[in-house]
View (tube, helix red, strand yellow):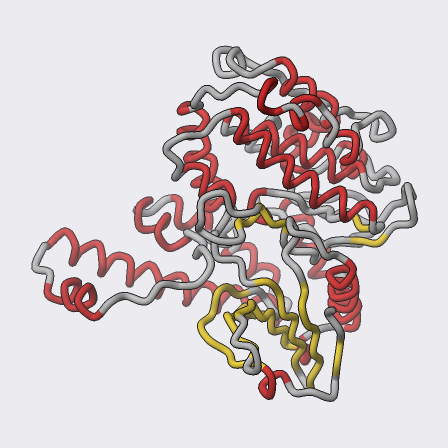
Length: 412
């Protein structure tokens, strides 16, 4: 059972290893529990840098994660608070993102998509039964337990999750990721568990054809599409998708949250529970090809330096922005020597180009952090992508987008 303790030092019980990821105030590292040898992922939060509000969010995340014990959810095993740092010890998931795994498969069918969404629905249903709304269901938060074939899908990142009472609907703040936001959130209406089911509908749509149901470079037009429920099933890619799959998507992407299908109802849908006889087994190569492009685009959009990097060498930018999958692999000494002794001019130029990009990213990121710390909005706007919106839970006031949203947080 996960428990919070302040009397036991983390370093007494755990040994830390390589870094797996990093956030604004936290770092994730592989760790091992010394008495058992069991490996985990430790999210280490620098509490000295947190505001009172951030402390509340951290406490809420730990409280929520403690509640959830399900094979399709990344589990919290321990929560340790020390002077200046808080440690959250989670399952070590090494399979990377579900969407990245799909594009590497030799065979992918509608039945496979059904199995994927079933596991996601199982995790969402468990959350909802425990009074938890995730609020940020998206591909980046759908991981695989390991690299083994058939590894379980695990829902991660409960940083935006909230606690609700039963079917409570209220305004819990503007939070989420643009393409997965529900109409009721965009309308600033009271909302609850149905927002997760809308996001599941978006994810299922992508799982079947490799592109999202709502898409526009202009965020205002994107939000108008979502609020109107303006999606369709265009030919030819949707012609080979079964009517049952489309029916489930329609039930998930229902504008009225009161009429939207619930997680428990979706798990009883024929396309899910009668997969072997209802879902098509035909390989969907076009879906895999489209999903590769979708993955590349979302990775690029997720970077702070999207605009700057997109105008430069794309292959170098893509390699820098690719998120590591699980534990980093160490290069063998022979492969390192081979890389160092390679005489190919192409390899040398590319390596130097990548090094230069890395230095450029480090330099500009430091400038960005300095601008934020100094409250220098003018300097900030010169660095940040003007089309990028940062979503923050419990944002108050009118809905603002793009740089106006960033200005809101500089001034408040």
